[in-house]
Amino acid sequence: MNIKPVAVITGANRGIGRGIALSLAQNGYDIVGISRTLVSKGKKKGLKDLKSEIGTIGADFLPIESDISDLIYHKKIISEIESAFGRVDLLINNAGVAPEKRLDVLDTTPESYDRVMSINLRSSFFLSQLFAKEMLKQIDKIPEYAPKIIFITSVSAKTSSPNRAEYCISKAGLSMVSKIFADRLAGSGINVFEIRPGIIETDMTASVRSKYDEMIKEGLIPQYRWGSPEDIGKAVSAIASGSFDYSSGMVFEVSGGMNIQRL
Image 1 (spheres, rainbow, N blue to C red):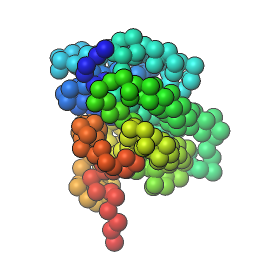
Image 2 (cartoon, one colour):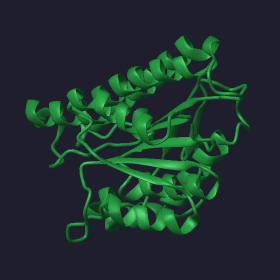
Image 3 (spheres, rainbow, N blue to C red):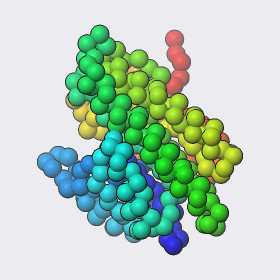
Image 4 (cartoon, rainbow, N blue to C red):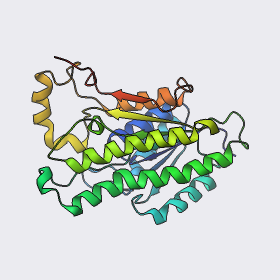
């Protein structure tokens, strides 16, 4: 059985997921990256690129090409990880999408709503359900085993954006999923946390770069800068280190101070 801790990251091929994977690899974790993109296509990075970067750090990396919104693949994901590593110490539910087109809430379509909910909320709920059951099986088998589940939500979990209502609702729902799993698993030795990123510089925010550049200059973010995937990776690694093992259910906002109520 693998003696290094193993972290599983959904949406690991780029952006926040990539930042998390690199940070955890640097802190002693072997990595399982899950994504629909295995090989790079144009500007879209694939898991194979990440595999080479992880390898230079000295960590093992298992790429799994899968669409987690299709629940039929979840058991196969577990099986591949068990065969490769024999354990899972950390699940990071990071995979998420924005609406393909931003529309006023009065024009939001059922198709867009269902797509965002399926990927951002439904898949994370049922993947966490399955991984939690596997973690419970491993608790008595692995010495000093302290498994954790982390949900990557957004400041949009508490902040209204009427032109992307389905995204905000999905992240608010995921925030509650985190609380429910934390409540259910706290007495069983599995800690659950939520990380709320603020405005992070990724492919998802590239289309609104100029808008947020201006808003940041005007003081939207007290620290006056974009967040980076590395900022989120550091937060995940801090939780993974065990520093917050008496804080299950906590919400960690990584937003440059957007959580501060100001006049």
